[in-house]
Length: 114
Length: 114
DNA sequence: CCTCTCATTCGACATTCATCGTACAACAGT
DNA sequence: ACTGTTGTACGATGAATGTCGAATGAGAGG
Image (cartoon, rainbow over all chains, first blue to last red; front, side, top):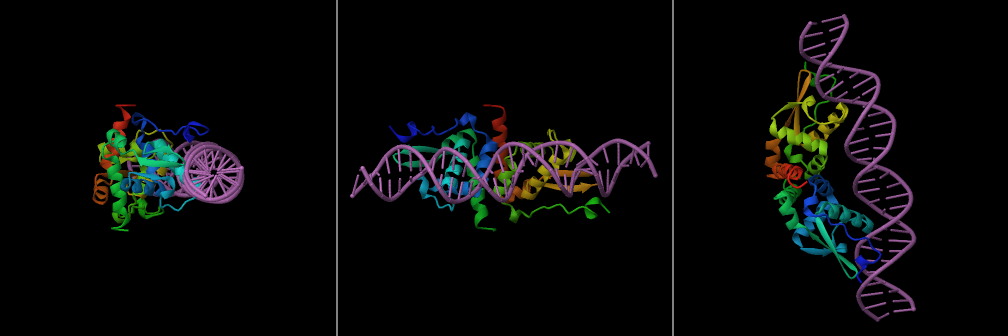
């Protein structure tokens, strides 16, 4: 029996109909979380520890929860690892072009005129 | 001599090169501020008191400052009124399709599936 | 069985934030 | 001048937020 079904509370993953744009915007307005999303756009699925962000593990867990409860990412358990992926398709179905516009804007703001 | 040039500090309006996507996302992640932006999309310019938001005047001033310092709105003085307008073109030039995608997503989230 | 790794939960902390009431300043009429 | 309107500035307050360290728990592998 995997860890997620024993002592650990089930991971909260809202349905696309429950997505709230304001929650998504808030989730993406933090630099650490935006870096996570940006990283996930390049790699389809990653383990928690493989993100190049400079925060404590418990802080990372916190940021994952914010993203997950907003519907931005999906997490699944696999042995001792927790894999994280973007909910590209769900987001696109609910809010077309939203994620693309935001992440593109963020990446445009990094190098060119800063 | 208008009010803005006397005892009052000049209104802070960042240049488009200084826009920060994360600041913009944070500014738009509040329901009151999103309502303001949505209202401004319909009317090109409005006076402060003409927004259908249910907060105290001083709170409204606070929200205008957040939006203004993020580059979302522009405010100008005219006699006793302060006129507020969206910085459509500046935002579009700096972050193409960003505002459109966000406001559209917000409006889609209001009626259809909620 | 023992240990190491991975990631979480919990509690604490300092900061930021949304909100309001009060006081105030400038303009517009009368 | 006096008065009402418009909107700001300031200070306070309670809630939310980002951060961390310590403790915990489950899995993997010797």
